Length: 120
Image (spheres, rainbow, N blue to C red):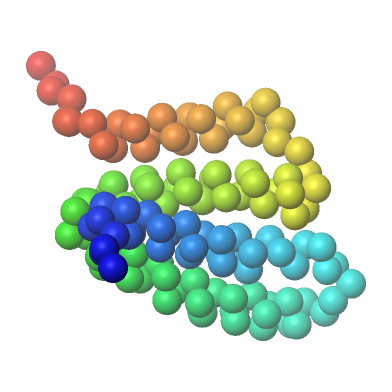
């Protein structure tokens, strides 16, 4: 069975991690009738599995990406998953302002992967 590339595996793990964390942080918004202590406990349970994906993603990813690059990848994945989750699960639409804000964050990630800009 072929192994996943060293560059792809951390990205896939971060996608799984962000699916879990987005669910933990925002999934309870559909259950506002549930007591806060209950949704916190459920969220912690989901976050437990998120850590089992995020920590290895960063450990493995640090062999091929810098910490800043890993953070940039994670932020772009987070925004992408959040946008989908917001529309599909929460039934909220993404506005043009949201899209512009997310695009600016993605542009920041682009520069993290570029060679350093010379100052003179």
